Length: 217
Image 1 (cartoon, rainbow, N blue to C red):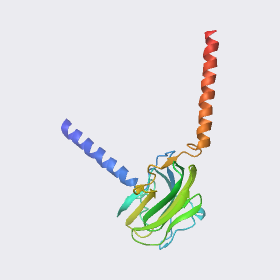
Image 2: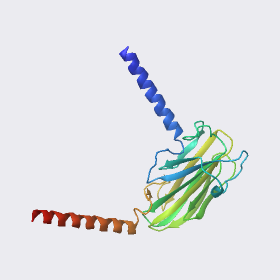
Image 3: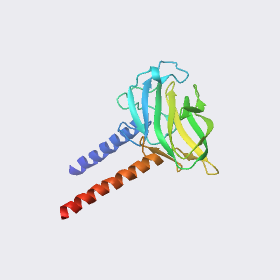
Image 4: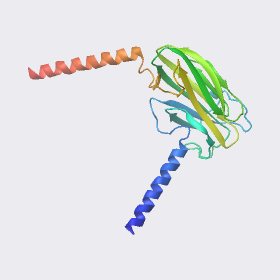
């Protein structure tokens, strides 16, 4: 009897875990500071291009540390809106820190439409209703913090795809964020931010040192 209960517990744990993972195809509901924040929107039926998300109200918020959704079926919906399987859009935004200055070539694979913006400049336009298709674009990025935005929409169910890749110099293509790019907390991991952080550490150490000296007296 105990063995049966244990097996049932293992089965239901595995089942719930798998279901939870499937729910987080586009990102999880738990807030992650160093990640892309995705706002999810319902779209009118027969939408055939990306909308102006500023005119819409989000129905859910998700967080993703990468965009790696190969072409496959989507039947789980989103946290809090599990019935949302088609005619939806997502706008991901976040801060990145580029470790090496240079020319970056990006590839955005999507089904259906998607766009990539960096520092509010359109880098890739892969909009429209289509099967999994790649769009390409390049931009020079200096060693600093930059703002990234990826817009995506899904038309009729069920096939989805959304992957972001890049190449730097002669290196092989890698999945974003990769080696040269880091997703970061806003205002952190920049040269200025690092100096401020170092100053605060030194200041805090000095205060602790003074307090210890006073106690010894």
